[in-house]
Length: 206
Image 1 (cartoon, rainbow, N blue to C red):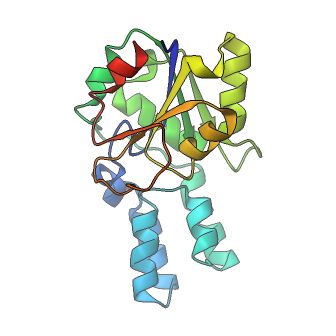
Image 2 (spheres, rainbow, N blue to C red):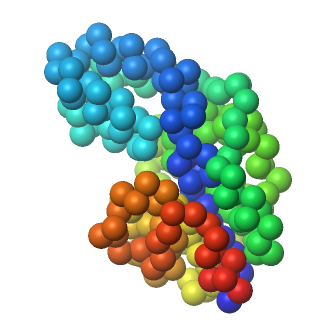
């Protein structure tokens, strides 16, 4: 039996593509203007709907000036338009377990998304892992949650969409993982569980 669920935010509770055109409009314009390779620019913009800006900028070799301009655009950004979670999220809301939200990104932006989604009250605590503010990673936060709440690793289930982020860090800590994979992208992942929706989570928790 699981006492706690730890959830990711982006592409786990809601689809980033539902807000990316408006949210990233200035950043996408910068990338189009400054990256000479059109295909690389397209791929970088696609990756930004899945991964934090700092990691994408590093992987795609953004020049230091472009990287800094992007950081300046996002550091104080917020999102104030209506947002909707995935329909499946309602099944997680109903599960009788303590819930924590652990998300990576710019603090102001991530908290504004939580506010617009109206989900803050679903969680015992919300953690933002902001690469601009600390060197912590999600694994560090998972350990902190365990220590602060007296959980054993086997009493927790971590739910997310990224095999290289929360799934990887959870495995390092020894926590079971549920990979939410609605597009069936990660058939070779090593998550404990993997599915296109959340219907199986209630059975795992209980």
